[in-house]
Image 1: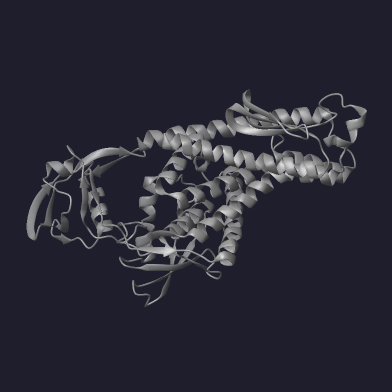
Image 2: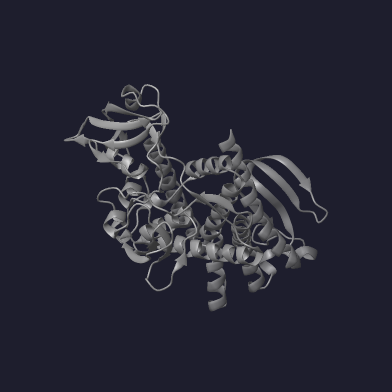
Length: 453
């Protein structure tokens, strides 16, 4: 229920802001607005404003629209002709079209700024032992390293305030096929050094658990058994919540990352391998024999003991002042928009996986997870979706605002509007492309959920 409510609230807010942008600029330009609708289909709520605009809420909430007086849609009374959209100057019509994405962009800036102002307690970017063979291990990262800044060119560095900051930078570099340079020190902030994380070697890969394992970044945490699933392999071996793992097969276990990697690799020739664990329990050292079970994850069979491991990582509270937070909102929204456009371009050229596209099921799941995590994560989620909506609507597809802006650009350059015949053909092509994108995104959702569950 939380997921559904969080998803519907997000949809209603983002659609309302988008259509409000069109509506306000249309009214400012003297255009008569006939209907302001949130959703499509059967009208479930209606109110008529003082200026004659009909405000409606419809049954299918996957979008909305602002219907303006326009001679291309039907007869317009002579005394209202000046209020018709098609009669306004080209710059005004372009401003009305661009106002929807602009409103979503402004909302994203303010929401990102609000997240910075409110602040949040997040894991510190102090890393655990990298898995064997991972990018992090090959880069030279060690247990206890504290990543302080990142760069894609080795020249312009961006401060890393937390582990989520680092993970976002890594996934952005991987999606775009770029190398990520890291500035790291020890946990006390001494012995700084620069490292290269070769994220470009994983370009084109879809984000999943296997990819995250190959990158190998996780927070430093004590090697504790946090929970034991009843009936699982760990429970069968006699493990108990609170056990501190000292060694596995005679090898000292320094942290939770090392422990996870040891479990993951506990199979020979496709078969689970028995392990000898020494754990500390209530001041006593206990020896256990544990054999993982193979489970399916992202199309691969991996060893699992069905236990939760790791103490809570060290956390830091990150917040910003008013001006700094507002600038953070501007900077974050711009960087995300540029990354999104570049990623779309790489998907179209085959340099990035189309599995990076997410559909309504994934968005709804993220909405529920962020809402359960608290106000700040939910605001961050809303900011990202609002910006994605702005960028998507600015794509030069005839069914979107960006397509209409292309019509206006043609009119401005040629001195004449796009013919109705061409508009019809382009509308059909745009509708087909959008349907294919939606089908692909939904297919990715189904694949992700099948892999997760």
